[in-house]
Image (tube, rainbow over all chains, first blue to last red; front, side, top):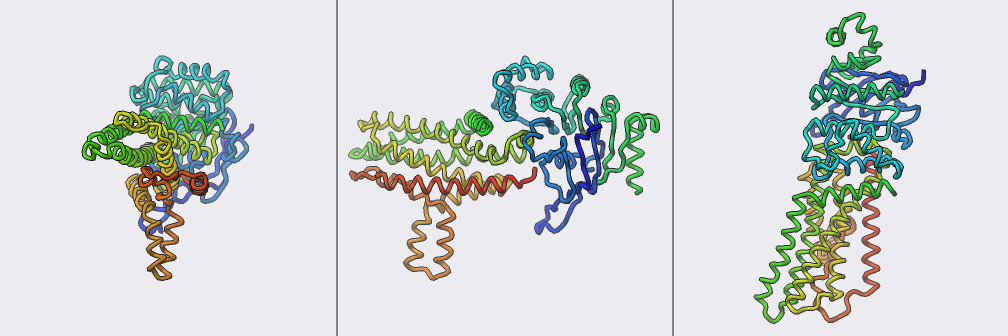
Amino acid sequence: MENVIEIKGLTKIYKALDFWKNDRVVGVKNIDLSVEKGEVFGLLGLNGAGKTTLMKLMLGLLKPTAGDVKILGKSIDDIEVRAKIGYLSELPYFPKYLKVREVMDYFAELLGLPQRSKKARIEEVLEIVRLGAKSDTSIKGLSKGMQSRLGLAQAILNDPDLLFMDEPMSGLDPLGYKETRDIIIDLNKRGKTIFFNSHILSEVEKICHRVAVIHKGFLIDVQPMKTAMKKFGSMEKYFVAKIKAGDKA
Amino acid sequence: MRRIAAVAEYIFKQSFRNKILNVLILFAVFAIGFSLAISELAREAEVKMVVDFGLFAISLFAFLTIVLSMTVQLFEETELKTLTLIIVKPIKRYEYILGKYLGMMMTVLMNILIMLVILMLIVKFRGGEPWDIKLIEASMYSFLSVAILASAAMFLSVVTTSVPGCIIFLISIYAMGHLTIHLKNLADKTGGAVVKAAVDLIYYVVPNLELFNMKDKINSSQALFDLNYLGLVLGYTSLYIIVMLVLTSIIFSRKEF
């Protein structure tokens, strides 16, 4: 099976915010990980464990201190690679004086969607995330959950081969959970790969093929979902056991 | 090109619909209108008074537009983290910088045009010549000075993430930009070698905004806006902006989010 994400010896050390910037803080250390095409991969960890740092390194938003990341077989700096991925940040924010359709049009232009099909694609995606009726509404008229759905809409606008989602359930109500889950499952059925960070273990349990646990910057475990469930019975038990083991190590 | 145009349009719409900037335009219109009241104090030179005050207001409010526009952008980029969703898209970082700069300049141009039209109406009301070419050229020089300041603002916005720090730096550049030529003249006449070197450094780094100051010359009968001078100013402006935007793009391409 083809690997769409390949990470080798990835390390990120931050300069601390003290005046002389002499202190160093480990973001992630010596991470080796690969994600296969067509997988839904869940990365679990406590707050500050390094989940977002790892995702930002994969997306090129942070530069690694050491190690290497390949996305779809190439560097993320390659424009062609970035045209094939989608990214949803945690609690995305959009300028409040713009309308939903204008925001989507902006992202469509950045993605270089063909002018002929752009409008239809925007409408299609807004329908998928249930914002079709809000397309002429200003962002300031959207609830937090609606803004999260708009974030999801821009992430899937280019029908990405690989979708990164940082806490995709943040700010959503239970119906939003289900809709996001359905979108992930639908994308995956069409052969897309999804990599996401989440605290919502019940959702991870429902949609992931494989899970990994990151703790204090170290990747301490990677398991197929079936194996983890068979051994621990639930994601919660699996997660707690791995964190405790990580603390002892 | 499509991506640069998209960013420019996005920044323009965002700035032009921002309530703070709209209030600023209202203040500018009010300030230019206020020149009517002031001109009552100088009965023999009403039009001169209106033009002087109007051009001062255009230059000041165009600068404030840049300060506020940059503040809004920087706040959204750093505090609300809007940039991450944009720069993971297939856009080169220098394209984003260029688009953002053009978007800011479109906002300033729109504001200057609005203020100029108001000023021309007031000049006409006071019995002056609204289509005086000098009035339009002086406004164009104001636009060029703000174009230079905007490039400096772009640079500051990538070297600091502190919004207040950025504003303070920009206001300092604005003030120093009007003083450097006088400082240089003074240092050349009276300063020692160290002072001269320090003043020279400031003179070449900080934009010389006095080049664009036409307020003192506008009422002169001489032909002030000759092509040689315009060419010199355009060359200086273009060079300064290119250097600033290249430096900004280099730093921005290395920046982490």
